[in-house]
Length: 245
Image 1: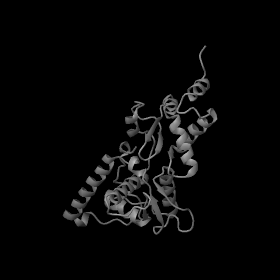
Image 2: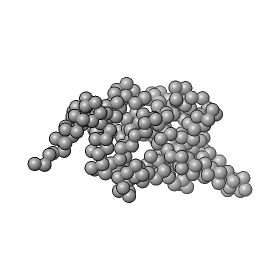
Image 3: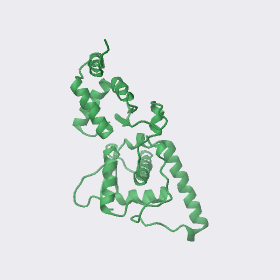
Image 4: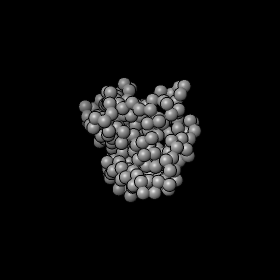
């Protein structure tokens, strides 16, 4: 007699890890990953508990999500799980993560790449890290986006705050909502998971683009005016979606 998915999950959980994850907890883990797409152990105490339980049944979670074409990626060094929707190639393996169907906005991709660049600078000693977090202003992020990608952050405070909340959802930044949130003077912490979210290739492409823009500005300054950090988004930037993880 064929077993139901629920029966299979219940039987597997008895032997997954140390066998202490109950079916109800497995359902909670799956729901949380489907809802937010991420579990990072260092984010909060409740999320640390969820992460530890997910580690206990990691293989079963992978197989469970694979049945619907999702990819569960685990960065052990950064203690973070990310769940990705089916890749365009339909491979169902980790490489499929690089070909997501998820539609990421230009603003999100540009900000993520710039944050990766700034965090990499901190790792090389050019900026100060405190408890593996880099504190910057939104103005510093805006300047990095302009210099690296010839792109600008959204002009309105509401749109910038919406972008920051999307970045926070992916555990790339942390900041406090409240007075001043979304203003160019606000402070935010860039978090370590940005290193696993943005690939080395995406960052290298961004640096190459910055070099080309700089060279064009030097040779024809009248054709390459410096954009304002709060103007509308540049139409020339095409986000390298396949190079984010």
